[in-house]
Amino acid sequence: MISTPRRVAVVGGGVSGLTAAYRLCRADPALEVTVLEASNRAGGKLRSVPVGDLSLPAGADSFLARKPWAVELCSELGIAAELDAPGTTGAYLWTDGGLAPFAKDAPFGIPGDVGDVFRWPGLSRAGRRRAAQDLVRTKRKDPGDETLGALLRRRLGDEATDRAVAPLLAGLFAGDIDRLSVQATFPELARWEASQGSLIRGAQAATRDARRGRDPGPMFLRPRAGVERLTDALADRLDPRCVRTGTRVTGIGVHDRGYVVHIGTIEALLVDAVILAPEAPVAAELVRAIAPGAAAELVGIPYASTGVVLAVYGEGTARDLPAGTGFVVPRGRAPMTASTWLSNKWPSAAFGSRAVIRSYVGAVGEEDVLEAGDAELIEACARFQAAVVPLPAMPQDAAVVRWSRSMPQYELGHVERVARVRDQLPAGIFVTGQAYDGVGIPDCVRGAGITAEAVLTYVTHVSRQEETVP
Image (cartoon, rainbow, N blue to C red; front, top):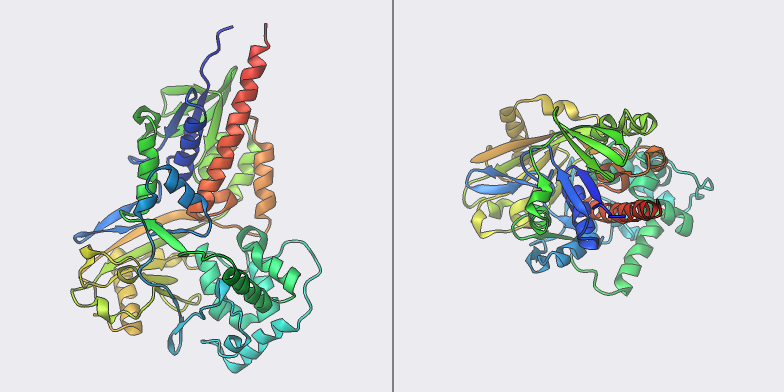
């Protein structure tokens, strides 16, 4: 019996889809892998946009280096030598009294030093005393999941939670801490309480353990040419015929040999397996006809809309920025949720002496700010920046990038929901991406690798089954 080549379709050409395709092709060059990307370029949210004479990040500006998967992938792709560490470290919390630096030893923004708890900036004396009660409060006995807000409020109190910790932790998901799942977002916090009986002692132990080990190196890294260098390198390692941009998948059906992937209204691609790497609602529409239960679960994953305001100020303004990478803002206190001083964090000769700033706007409960026009958003962010640091009233150049329904929310029950999605998908259909096992670039790289392994196992099993047919 003559064996036919195995075909895999990857829907979505962001970092998850491209990584999955790269892993498949590297593991089995005989596989015919096709990446189908609806937009006119691969890379997803990892891209830059022009602002004046500069090219600035529209999506992530770096990735977490202490989760090793993205760094390891860069090494495989031969671009590890291009990775740069931030030009400075240290971030601030916006308070009514101005910017206050986060304590040096404060994992997740929680001080590990008792003295720092009693000096916690932005909190009243009562708020600090309540936070310190974390050291003596009884730990939770229920091993089940809870919201991030429930854990933080129970241990540290409302004031420390809302003013000091939530701006950092919730900001990473553009979410609401009273809806986010601990197990799906920051399971370390639950482990701290279980093992140490206290979040403060947990932060202390985590800091102590880090000091005992080898130098962990920088927390963040990025390719010198921008984070999109990673997805560009992935695409370059794939056969050019493998990555099809401007190609919108409209549905997936069952075929006697596997699946038929419908492209537009006239083209169909017959494949043995499909990897779905777009946003969960898009994946839901594609599998609704063949897996209605999985589609219903996918639709249940909520998303938040976000955006960034990129601003370039005049020559000589970079010196007006404090040392550090930027600041976060408590919920509802500013037009932005956080601000990165790009010219400090990622200094470049192209910046000259100009202050270059990226402000984050939008989040769960704050999405109405995105309804404002570009000029209004730029003015609002600039006005707030000028009140915080001595910058001019307006930048010389600016741009707004909106990401509609772009950030998945890992709400209570998320881990169980994702398990149900995968259980209810038919054999040969797989999901990977931000919506499932982590929103960061390293998490997406890791998840894509695991998915590729599962696909290889599946197509190998199918091949063996066919070989036994007389």
